[in-house]
Length: 211
Ligand SMILES: *Cc1c(COP(=O)(O)O)cnc(C)c1O
Image (cartoon, rainbow, N blue to C red; front, side, top):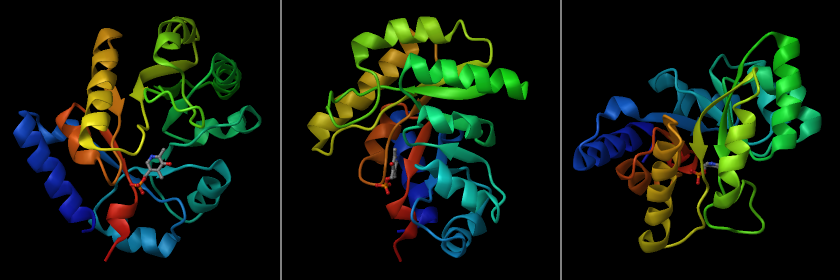
């Protein structure tokens, strides 16, 4: 495996689904990886956006790697002040966080770009809003001047295709319904299904770093 093979599989999935491969961006998930590994396994192939789960780890790597950084993990409100360092936050999961980000965006004179995380598998240990909470959250967040909601994100349960694929399809349907262009879905084990079901951002870690 490795990044070139992942790109080939994404392209093949696009072809099967009748999609343009240019619609799908690979976000290289670099949590737990050193800057050397990231250069060798990701950046030598191009300027891919890099995704980190934790703010502190991301900030450290920002000092040594020039890249477009995405936050893919839960953001605590007390770390909202670091949000302007990220090109995209995949994990908006409450209105309270949205309000905190609105304040940060206003102060920075910037419109912060976010995706709303939806817990489609309804797993209690996972972040993200439940599907039925989404309409109200979106309506309220869309009132905030310094936040721009570009799409939806989900992390489905680990499971067989019959469980996971319908959740990806659901996320695409929800994004369509709300007129949102971006769907962040698909990780190392399931990104092919996600691309076939309409992912525009796939968040892939492990598959890029194996030898
Ligand atoms: C770690 C992580 C990924 C990447 O997972 P892999 O299985 O390593 O591809 C994607 N999304 C989120 C939210 C993650 O925390």
